[in-house]
Structure formats: C-alpha cells, structure tokens
Length: 307
Image (cartoon, rainbow, N blue to C red; front, side, top):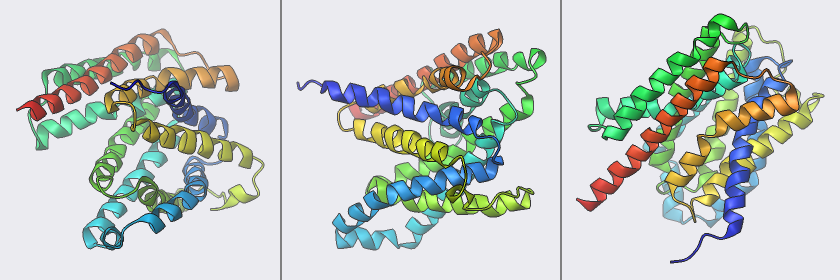
C-alpha cells in the first residue's frame, strides 16, 4: 500500500487555509458594496483560471468537446452559474450584517441541507446523517443566543449566510453531474464567469454605485488578487488536486475547520471581534453535526457498494 506523499498533506493544509481566508479578506474590503465585491472576486478568479481552462479544452477529445454544447450541459452550467451568483451574493452581504464567525458557520452548513434534500428526494438518510443534521440544527440555534448580547451578530445576517449555504447546494449538485466527464477548469470558468456577470445588474438594481470592472483601478486591487489566488487557486484548486491521493472524506473533514481558521485569520490580521461564548459552544456542536453528516454519507456509500 503506497503512502501519501508528505507534500500532499502540506497542500491540504494550504488548501484549507486558502479557502478559510476568503471571509476575512472579503470582510476587510467592505468599502466596496457587497454584491459588486462578490462580482469582482469572481471576475479576477476567472482571469486566473482561464489559461488552465484553455489548456484543458485543447487536450479534450472531439466527442467530449461536443458534449459541452449539448442542451442538457448548457442548462446545467446556467443553473450552476445562477446558484453560484446567489451563493456569493447572499454570503458576502451577510458579512456586512453579522460577525465573521457566524457567517462562516452558517455558510458552511450546506452538508446539513443536503441531508434534507436526500431525505425528501433520494433515499432514507443514514442514521449518522440524521443524527448529525439534528445536532447541527441544535448548534445553529445555540449560536443565535449571541444575537441578544452582541451588536455584531444579527438574525438577518445569519439568515443571509444560511441562504448562501442553501444556494451553494445547487452549485455542488451541478458540479457532481458535470465533473464526471468535464475537466475541472473547463467547468469552473464558464460557471464562475456567469456568476460574476449576473451579480452586476443585481448590484445596480440594489443601488450599488461601484463600477462593474472598477477593480482595475481600485486601491484594493491587491486584496482582490490575493483573495482570488488564495481562495480560488491555492484553496479550491489545491483541494481538488489532493483528491488524487486523499479520500474525499479526509478532505471534507479538513474543510469543516474553515469557520475556526477563518475567524482566527480575521482576528489576527484584520482585528475582527472574538466570537462570543454561545458562538463557540454552538459552533462546536454545529461542526460536530456536520462531521457526523459527512461520515454518515461515506458509510452509506460504502454500504451501497458492498451490497
């Protein structure tokens, strides 16, 4: 049995830190309205991913290329782009209305939402999935107790972050369907570009007066480039690369640390407030629930395979 190269564990750590940095940086550049802030982040990510997408497209077989333009593929890509725009729009807006820790806790609760979808439309959830979902909901409720004691934590902000988790499920489901045959960058670029474009008119309708591509001349350009590089390249791309050597369960467990790492980055580098006691306690319960959901999903797949 081959051992996992030590470099892969380093890549996993870097990937988790990369995705965890996004909330802190997006919260720091709050002089830019939230929807346009989200669009800028996606626009710059597209520019970074585009060379890799072109390379992958040129390496694709002709038959696979033809599948890119089939009606079903186009509709799924469109749906994924809409879901991604809704995810980033609601989540980044939540950062302006609640604490960083609360925003990260609620936006990363999508495994619990997926369990509800599985129960309604697919199959009976594994007992660990059910237990984890209930535990996660309890933890989320406990964190809301800090809304009474802190001006930073609001129910509206937490709700927006939860909607961000709800909408990202559509992006995840679309990705699972298309990534069975479509290269990762060929999938990511059109979806991310569509998300960036959709956020622009919505931003304007909401009265945000920042230019659609104002990042080109913005004093905050460096922060947005760093954000796209850390979260998009080091984070998401790095974690995808780890899948070659590590089990998805291992990576999923590691990513559940995002709220803790993200809150620490915000406190250490950007002077974000330390989370309240109910956030700490409820957050741990919520994260434990998410871990059980992930473990239950993996065990259900194993049981199905062995049948």
